Amino acid sequence: MTRTDTLAQALNIDAVVEGKARLSFADALRLYHEAPLHDLGRWANAVAERIHGTEVRTYVIDRNINYTNVCTARCTFCAFKRRGDEDDAYTLDRETLHRKIAELVAIGGTQILLQGGMNPDLPIEFYEEMLRAMKADFPQVHIHGFSPPEITELVAIAEIDGFPTTAPRRSGELPQDVWEAKCEAIIKRLMAAGLDSLPGGGGEIFADHVRRRTGQGKASAEHWLTVMRLCHKLGLHTSATMMFGHIEGIADRIDHMQRLRDAQDQAINHNWPARYVSFISWPFQRENTPLGRLPEYDVESDEPFAGDVLAEKVYAGEVDGMAKAACDAAVPEAGKIVRRASANEYLRMQAISRLFLDNFHSIGSSWVTMGPKIGQMGLYFGASDMGSVMMEENVVSAAGTTYCLNEEVLCHLIRDAGYTPAQRDNRYNVIKLHNTNTAPDRKVTDWSQHRAKKLHIESTPCDSNEPDNNTPITLTINR
Image 1 (tube, rainbow, N blue to C red):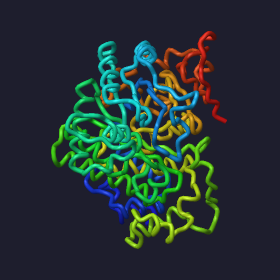
Image 2 (image 1 turned 60 degrees about the vertical axis):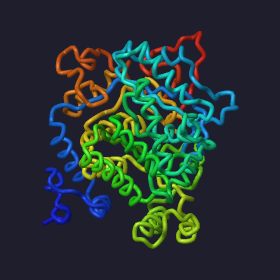
Image 3 (image 1 turned 135 degrees about the vertical axis):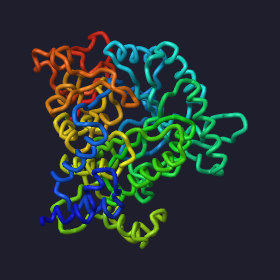
Image 4 (image 1 turned 60 degrees about the horizontal axis):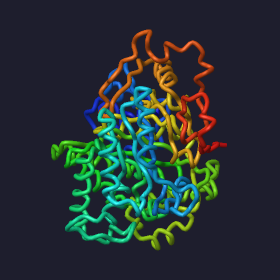
């Protein structure tokens, strides 16, 4: 019996793959440290095939629209935010928003990902008017909008009859019952105005000893999860995310997924009308960010990574993760050095997420940060979806490389991996199955015109050959 056979037997992997057993926190950690990468991929792919079949893999045509870059949070991994007094601080007007949506509809798009910073100058009426206007002009477009941090900021600043306000970033000062009641009222108003689902942005890593260093002034893990719990009770479907490869320990990543799985169990067990539909993770992009200026961990070093040491102490009960002084005293170097994630690391984590998150329907591949070929490899490591055609992206591209792919290339990548590409909607229902000669990729005669780009042009779609020479554009060159 090989070491892999012994590991698989100890963790009851065959039953896990069949959906008859669950991985524990300790099991997932052991898989990370002991399982060969190709075996992780094989097991995760078997789970994906059990859930989604062996023939079809999906993508969506949507557009990331960042309606404002003004934000009060002090996230150390972000290069996108502005305080509001800079020359390039912005809040998009209705005309610009609707032009972007019209460009999406013109290429067959069905959804927008609408997100922005925690802008303290925008009242809840701004969001309601924005949503109503979009639905009036584009009723067919699904609005996958905002995030738990944006909702949490509205709990602080929104003036709603019967509820108090706080200063920006201070909603946690409200009593918990008041916080939840106000949050629920906000979600109801946004749903009534046209919000169709809530993305999982702002998840990053939930662990307190990590989050207080990376997401200062942002929604706490408890607030993030509470927003999503209320969405599920009210019938608003959501997604979940994780950003890894910075100061966190491996155990922090598993803890993050454990909290998501527990929350999904709660939604299922209570038969709430909505739940998490999908999970996607990606590695931290360090360029142009405060966190990225930290020294990088030498993976060849004999010294353990400080983030792992602290995480192990926290989960062993030796250190209170919520006590900053205790954490600093226990592991002084924790949070002061970054361990970036390689392509190998990314695929390993994606495979583990598919095996561990057994109550999530879809695992997405993050080609936006990893590049098209690693994104394609993700289809063999538990992913069943290639995400979106990238017309526009501003947040991640401000902190590192963002690739742009059109529909033809996405279809080609899926088909080249051995699957039939299909366009989907937000709930992962197939809209178009591309199994004929009229499929987008099969109509291409010159692939040199469809190469992936590493240039972000905010106001010009990625599939445009030339920007309008008379229109000012903002460029981010990813070096």
